[in-house]
Length: 174
Image (cartoon, rainbow, N blue to C red):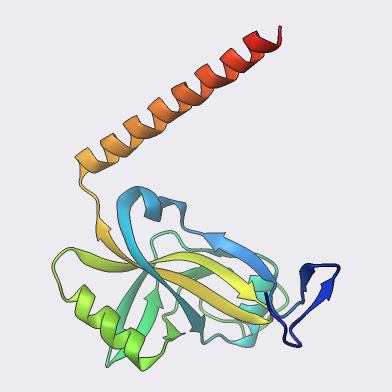
């Protein structure tokens, strides 16, 4: 339980202030289907003013985006941010490379892992934490087609089990 100035207690429940609040803008739902997620990291983004305004309006997509390294720095490529409707000639390019803000130790660790065969870094979620735009990225390994079929089969069997339990409860009530 926090006892700093960031939160305060009402009764015995901590109340989150706006500094802690999270507003999710976009998620990459396909990433969990196509990859085994091994580890996640939170990275800040270097953005222009019109990009931030467009993100606050919720106009972004992580489809087909990926993270790569250039000269020891991490960049996210193909992340779509819709141009700000009230932005004029100072508007941003929709899919420009955007720099990620990570600690040097995190960058070195990710570079070491990505150099191994089959590992990649995929963006999972784009959100605001307080007033700062953040990108949740994951170290991932690509799934084979039989892994995907196995996951689908597990999901279907779990649904069948849940349905059977629900029917049994309904029958027990009557």
